[in-house]
Structures are given as C-alpha cells and as structure tokens.
Length: 250
Image (cartoon, rainbow, N blue to C red; front, side):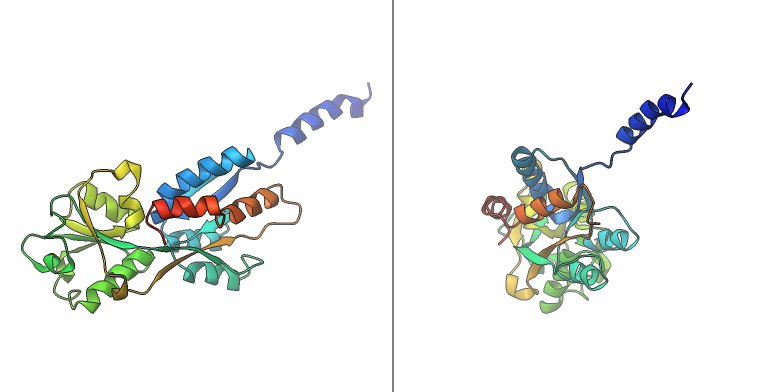
C-alpha cells in the first residue's frame, strides 16, 4: 500500500484543524467595557467577524502585552501605556486618542444635592473607593482631584483601593463603601441604571483623561491582521463616536 496515499487525508484533516483563529482579541480598559459591548455588536453585524473582549486595568493589560499576550487591539484608559508599548516596538504606528473620559463621584446612599468631594471628609462617609492610581488612569485623576481640594491627606485612612475601576465600582454598588470614584461611562451603562446617585467631578481639578487605542503588531501573514485593522479604524468612525457619546465620553 502507498503510505503517502494513506496519510494524505489525515494530513489534510490535521491542517484544517490547526487553522489559526480569525477571532480578534481586544484588550479593553475596565471603564470602556460597557461601551465595548455595543461596539462589538455593531462591528460583528457589519463585518461578520468575531471579537473577544478581555477586560482589566490599563496597567495590567500593558503588563500582559509585555509578556506576549495574544491581543490584537489595545483600548486603553490613557495615552501613557499605549505610548510605552509603541516605543518598545509593540506596534508599527503611534496610538490615537479615541475619546476623553469623565470622572464621577458615585454613591448608593448619599443624595445628589449632598454628593461632593467635601462630604468625603464628613462622618457620613466611612470608606471611599478609589481605583488603584498606579494602574488605573481614573484612580490617578481621583487622587489629583482630592489633592487639589486638600482632601487626600484628611481622608487617607478611609480610602479603599480597587485593583481596577471595575473593582472600585463593585465596592460602591455592593455598599462596601459609602462613596467612590469611577468613570461616568460605568454609571451610564444599562446594567447600572438606577443604582444610586452621582455627581461629575470638576474637570479642571484633574488632567484630561485622554484615552488612546493601539493596533498591536501582527506578522504579515497573520489571518487576523486585516480584521484587526478594520476594528481599529471602526473605533474612530462616526457610528462609534455616537456610542461613545452615549456613555459620557467627550
């Protein structure tokens, strides 16, 4: 029996099974996770291509990219981390700003007419949730706002740091803290509708939260290169801007 003829069908089957996946993986900062669900739905409807979303803090996602995580697009909560990846050779082009974020103070129990930064230093508030400023840009913005009002030191013992903006939001929505800082986009998400009260933090009290996306490097023969480019471009489309605006991004 001709061995080549015997093994040829098996090789064809194996080659078919080992075909690389064309599903693109989007590393997404926690504040963008809800808007990303809508962007995913719209893009998949238009392109017929699948997207997988991986959510974490921008700092943690950057560490994973450094370690070789197979992400295709990085949607960050700032410009610093995408710039770092670009400078280290992780992309062939500079990152682009897709939106500016809005910082908000959120509480389940404190009404809006009382909710402001100064109340954090009162007896009404025992614990304050803040995303880790070393990993989450919104945490950094919260610290800047508190410092500007000379409140960081007075409430230092009350602060509970969340690993990401998602964890800080969890502390707030479960009532583990009386108030906390988060992105307006999280509060406006359908999943959070009607949960508590919020006030927008004065945007002059912190540096603008410019959020950038980065198309990560692919080999020339990667089956995901073209789709990744299409999704990256979609982030800056008119349709995407409407969705971002809906969630409070500028």
